[in-house]
Length: 142
Image 1: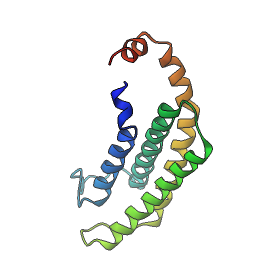
Image 2 (image 1 turned 180 degrees about the horizontal axis):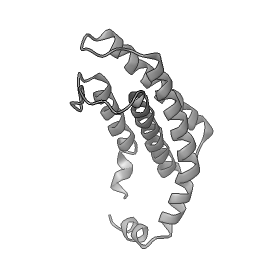
Image 3 (image 1 turned 45 degrees about the vertical axis):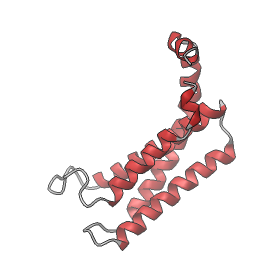
């Protein structure tokens, strides 16, 4: 656990890189002919940004042990700005993808839901984890 503190935001940066790849690649999961239902794309956008902000909340809480409102605000604003940038880049690139305002709103809603979920669940999960035998074992490993 102590070595992981050297690079504290690695999980958030990994999720950010995955979102960038999924947003900018031509057909990242090879699903052009696969249709679920109308609006499934918006659900995927919301889930991606919910995951981004949730992992960001995890990193913030893991590092400081509590939530700071200003850092949470920066996290959500950064995720919304990142979603807007991805949509603008999709519109600017000529690879068969297009920018969509509804995707941007789905990204923003997912970011806000990720914040609410992270602030509500992470303190409870960390409290439960600190009481576990696994935490005691990993905390003593150099």
